[in-house]
Image (cartoon, rainbow, N blue to C red; front, side, top):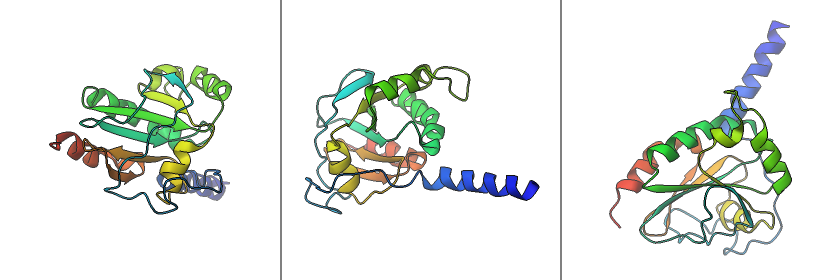
Length: 185
């Protein structure tokens, strides 16, 4: 039994470091094809169908920093990282805009936000950044697929010049975010 528990713990720990694996996607890529979005590429436009939390963001504006994170309610590593993202949003509240993007329905996201987080508070009070849905997969296609990103959570930092400055696991974005915020436009 101890060996089973150890193996289960190892599996959960590995998943939190690696991510949840592939996210379903459509077959077409409208941002120039797979691999066309790289560090230094112009940021694709936002395509959020509905906002659940925070003020709506209509477009990427020059001179501002954005963190766009792809997540899902069923993704354990995504949920484990959300408090960290909220801490960063609070730390950089005047310098960066954080947007969590999921392809799940409004009903599913609203139900999730009402559930209790690991701290005992509802997720709606635990997550301090904007959340939106990407039901038509425009964001997924133009960011995740175009950057050859196959698993979540994945984050993109859009720098002040409107280009992609960083792509990776959101647990690792602290240094890159600090650099993006300090950059002169």
